[in-house]
Amino acid sequence: MKKNYRLNNLGCANCASKMEREINKLEGVNSATVNFMMQKLTIDAVDESFNDIMISVQKIIKKFEPDCTVNM
Image 1: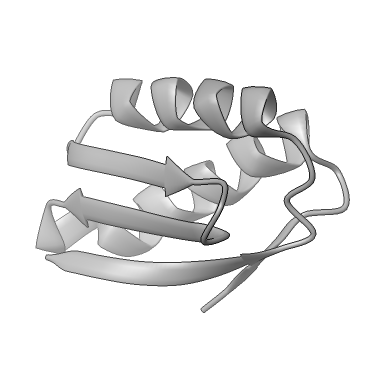
Image 2: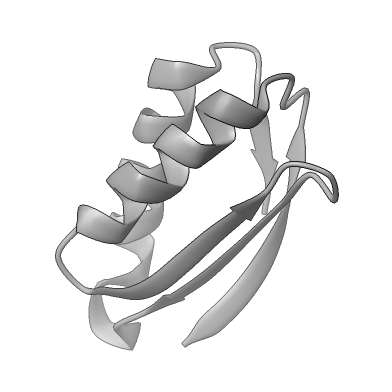
């Protein structure tokens, strides 16, 4: 399943790169991109565990950008 999400308050291009790297390491994630300029997350992951993956994704985002939120 592939989905796009808006990232609110993403303020650092370097942090976006770190987020993308960490998200791509998650089990079940086929690919993920964090576009700093567009403030967008695109994630392609296994359907069965997509909700669990998104919980982990939100934790990763908070780790690098505490004020950043994912519009789901």
